[in-house]
Image 1 (cartoon, helix red, strand yellow):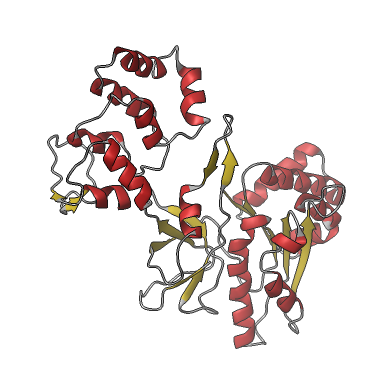
Image 2: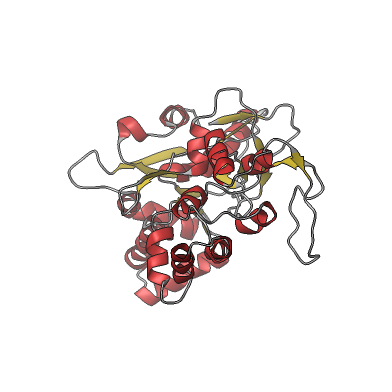
Length: 370
């Protein structure tokens, strides 16, 4: 996914992240306005603090309508926190609703609260609908629904190659709850439905990984969307190589994995092109887990190239990077590195752990997961 930033003056560097400020859908906003009995939803209102210790809202000095506040500022598509139900109990005269709400936030109701709210990823609208006689007054709405936070995506481009664009990799989140409800990621599904040419509120933030100097080798483990920051690293080096082919460029090894080669080979054309660039030291190792009976992951490819990894890190001062989903991959990669230290370096398990920890302290083992 790419955004035109030509007229914004925005600058970014390899390793930076893009913060996206999403909007809530008109359908959801309309339904919540109706449920809360907000009649004059398009009329401007002024937000003022009654309590000087109350949090300051980003729009507290601006006159907005409830529709604008729900659309741009409040996380109405998110899952309600516990205090939402505590407050909601004060706005119903139905004894059964009050009893249920008070039970959910009690110590006794902890497990039921988790099943009802957290596991189901219930939305604010669904929670309001489950307690139809509980309707807060307008002055309490801002206390009950938190502000919408930006979503962060690793930048997948180098501005040296794309001076007026910024690229990201987006996987639309979809999952099924224990009660068989299909849920979608709020931001990723919103981005999926954006028309070409739509305006989006965004900004640049610093990421957690630092790109190695041009001359140092880089080993990058980026399965799935984890490949994004490494594309920016590689593009930056490629731009430097194209500008001056005498510039020393360190060896680059990218380990990419996904489910199927035919469907999920992100940036396949880019990697094939770079592999054929004369004197550009790029190599690609792939692992497509569903293309054969026995699942193969990037962890397996790492072990297959144990000698190269040990040599580059130990003798050539390479930096080792890991990016991607936090599920099992990061720990799996770490376990492979421990095995490499033991088999290639003759270390005990304890010595291998200390070796990896030293790499981390020296920023030679960097990780960015989500």
